[in-house]
Image 1 (spheres, rainbow, N blue to C red):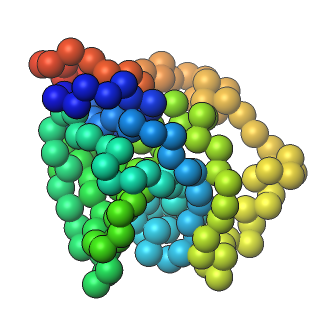
Image 2: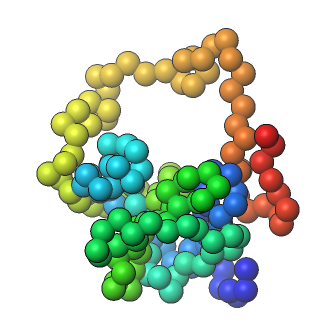
Length: 161
């Protein structure tokens, strides 16, 4: 990384091929629009807005998909992790909150795309759905992750496959 600023947050893809640093606190949001749902393969996209001047790619470069006449979405070409959303003509962009090393520190402050919000989302926070930990759900399996750890790693680090 050639940027001499101190990162406020870091993040990257699932396999570790692409990493980034943020040099200002992002503005976390949730978008329910249909394009974001499809882009992340989920009921909404958790995104964290940052000025384009306050992000640096520290390992690898993301691939890009032009998802509309107005925007691009970046992702890791090796593992497919969605990484960003950016309007072509805006000074800001958004990183996927789940790609941050500490996504728990990026608490959403606003929702967008409410016309496509799944009506059952309220059940997730109301406590009406039964829940289990990963180990409770898979008691006979050893759960082991080959994902990149949630911190920067030295050059040459690679996932165990």
